[in-house]
Image (cartoon, rainbow, N blue to C red; front, side, top):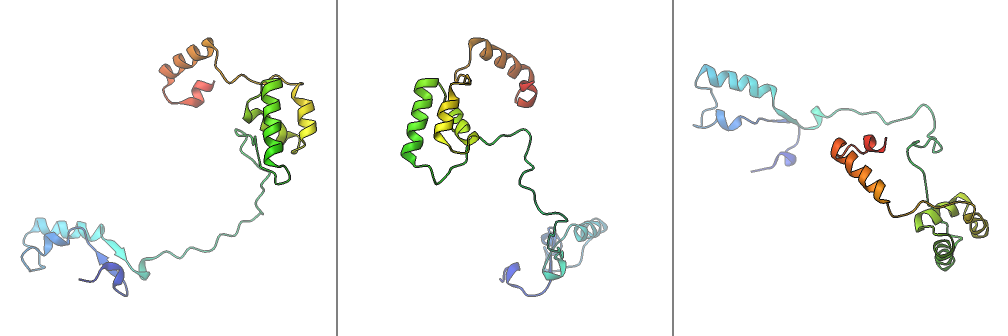
Length: 158
């Protein structure tokens, strides 16, 4: 039995075909089956090139602007090939040990200074990093908001 995809041309598949061909006769036996057939005709799956939509190629009116970013997000790291892994590891270690920054915060500072390690190291002391650990008060507030709002984190954030 050939599959639907192997047939050439257009075809129609019906979900109720088994109902109308049960005894080898394709004629409906009653008015109820006739109404089923009319309903089935409306819900047929149409297969083939005749039933495909013609979609024109997308051509935007204006060129895409990569500078328009989502205001809720902020890029914190973008790798740079000019910076070696050893130098990057040393910078992160220094930011953690001397200033208490976590890796994400240190990389964010480095990105802010356009991958200039010296300027980033000099600027680390000018800011107080956010702690990784939550205070007991923060945990209690979050648990209360979570029990009230559920998984609606946008509302919890407020």
